[in-house]
Length: 622
Image 1: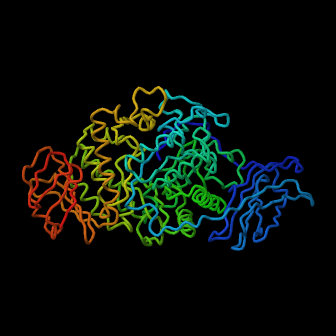
Image 2: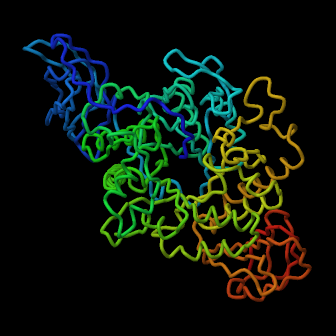
Image 3: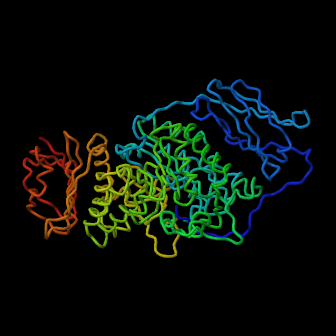
């Protein structure tokens, strides 16, 4: 994520060593709030919080569940309780008694539920899928009663581009048919967990409770209902998680369990934001520390994953959400910023429970060589292996801007893909032409409808797992000149609020250009659902050309028995007769083809007439 900065007073945060009356004992929360039987790993670590709770001894009497150890950190208000949940343990409610001087001062009924035992025979999100990214606060307001809530600070202010606008999970559910009808297969929501910050909290990346949906967006049950709606309709759900930092309003910030729960400095210190320092073979430790331990922002305290209790807390949080909400994938924010070893442990632990589970690392990196460090498919030269099975393909994103933007050179697409030998699994890369952190596609491509359609055709047919940002299919406007905030990139979906002048969820209110691009994207998406050569096929591409026609880029997605040829004419001139003889090795055995966009049948594959700034997606036939 890219956060727009606002500044809180600079404070060195330290553990609150409570020295009050030891008889005043409270029990305020236990996290994770419940767990499951049948896990591959028997150990579960409970974070227990309450005033002077460390003055008690937890006791459990439940068949198959034992307390392995209890850790009392520096802060008297915490206990970390390690449980062993054996394979013989049955679902039920465990009474955890907190004993002091042989008396029970508190108890908690901790529920064990049966694990779902879902199995993924292939990558849970894969080449057959297309993600649709939504910023929940900006999509649709389904419940005006939660626009402002008593348990959160920031109130509703739709006139402020950086304020809370009132979108929520119910709004997404209410407009689910639009998403389904578009033809995408997978939802990815920007974080929906509680962000109890005084301002600029709508984006979701300043989490104040890792187990609670923000009440202005709904409840955990609402998110579960949305995920179940996806599954009922053959769609999938990705959760956006953040482990590099929390929000300054997190419940533990005034009462930290350990001195090293956060990465702290003598005075406020920003991250260097230099991803390459991690893969740099000559990097100094001070540069590495500045990148990974510096804070992303003054309102985003940096979590110390080198603290083993923090590492375990975060790992268990992911597993909890996967199991509770039956997630199909996780997108991990700012992946190169946390401790890389802890993150590798996180990935491995998830795969223990859920083999083939999709994890995409947000890796905002311009250079393929540096990005491949996080998805090399093997140990890097420094001995590190991330185990991540997907990365955000920013090098290809920037190549699309060069290809279809002002440089107008298709060669950038060819060159970017030519570096795929550096990745372990390039076909798992998340590819995109827009997201919540970048200027809108409409503005990047100078409001040129033809170029936007070329970009969509490319992203939806090349290798990788595509992602579309909500509204790009409807030409949402979002320039970002210097000095502006990200709020302008995350505009409200017209029709999602009562009283909106237009409702773009329905075709009747769309302009001709909006309808043209929406229908174009929808046509490709619906065809794509059954195009196995796109889902699982190989890629063969040809250097843009031939000489004099360098604006033409041709590639094939193919299996042994089927193939689709994609021709992108990125130039401003029509070409009445373009010879296909150069592509003979890919056309061998095929005699005709059908353009899936226009429906036009090509009875021979010798020449083709190309219109300016037009993509042809041609299913080949024997």
